[in-house]
Amino acid sequence: MDNIKNAGTLLPEHDNKIKCSGISYENTACAHRNATDPHGNAAGTRDESYMRLALALAEKGMGHTSPNPMVGAVIVKDGRIIGQGYHERYGEPHAERNALASCTEDPAGATIYVTLEPCCHYGKQPPCTDAIISSGISRVVTGSGDPNPLVAGKGISILSEHGIEVTEHVLKKECDALNEVFFHYITRKKPFVVMKYAMTLDGKIAAHTGNSKWVTGEEARNNVQADRGRYSAIMAGIGTVLKDDPLLTCRIPGRRNPVRIICDSSLRTSLKSRIAATIPEARTIIATCCNDDDLIRTYSDAGFEIIKVNRTDGHLDLNELMDRLYELKIDSILLEGGGKLNWSALKAGIVNKVQAYIAPKLFGGENARTPVEGEGVSDPAGAFRLKDISIRLFGEDLLIEGYTVCLQE
Ligand code: AOF
Ligand code: ZN
Image (cartoon, rainbow, N blue to C red; front, side):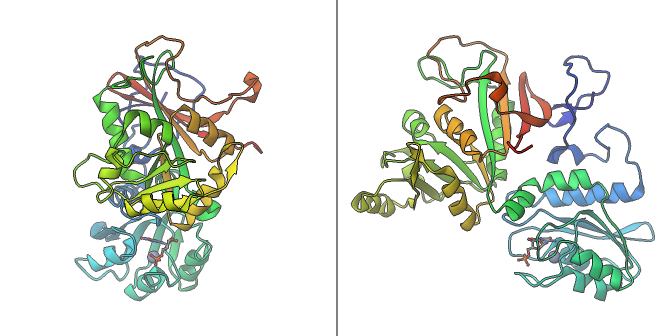
């Protein structure tokens, strides 16, 4: 079994503390930190080990490149690494140019390992293919293809046409996993939505009193904080905001705060809430169906950004909201919803990934809240299903993650 990780580390195959079968390992960003493959073996080929280094570099851009991808590059000549770089920040130079700029000797005749197909268009930056060609690099090794329609295979063709040897798809699975958000955002034109919740073994997200501090332990909570720095936005329902008065910020020093999005169809957010008090630190959007212009102005004056969407089925139209957030270049959302919003999000089909933290404790109580409420499905056969499941341990808490299965599949 290679599908169970302990705080990001794979448990060895013979470890039988946790057993599960029939679940395939889906690589996540943390599986390439060491120069080992997902099975814990020493790096296979030389190409793979340089690509692993490029992946680790790419990951350094996490939280700063969106809505563009994380990309890393390593330049190797005669078996020596002579340059390395990554895409550090949105709008700034691409990984390939940073790696070229760092070269300690002439890159002519060298190989560049890059986690994403080099771009060939003018955007905020000039084409990386031009820089590679003029540097005299003779071989390009890539991980993922770039699904951006402006690039999509054209980058590879241009390099080949210039007589450069190209090797594609090295550690493709790992490279694709690192940029799952970018790939979804650029091809589907919607933010990538991760529904996250923490519950007890008996499926409660709070005691019957409403007290939810804490369901999981410190390690699991630290991982949630890291995810708040990784995804562009965090979204919660008005019920959670009124009940918990949360901050919804990232408390890891040096990490930026996600954009906060409150789904508040009738504008009930308190102007005395901790969220209202911290708007200067974290951009905050209220999505609402409210048509009262005076009330809307009160919230705008307090610093909230207001997105007005239509009402469908008595709730705000989440698909319309996703379209509006895409236009605002919000590529990813951590949905820390509360049961009602979680159900609406599943029903609207906007959830891409589910992260369920499970604490080995029991709260009991028929009125204690559960992670997904609303109407629910009427038949087990109609369940929302997940695929590509992976399991990690944080302290004594389990994190089960998986991707939603599209209804068409
Ligand atoms: C990046 N960083 O290292 C690479 C990217 O507007 P631009 O010029 O920054 O172009 C963004 C596109 O360039 C992006 O969508 C992707 O297709 C391609 N490659 N982008 O931000 C990089 N290599
Ligand atoms: Zn580029």
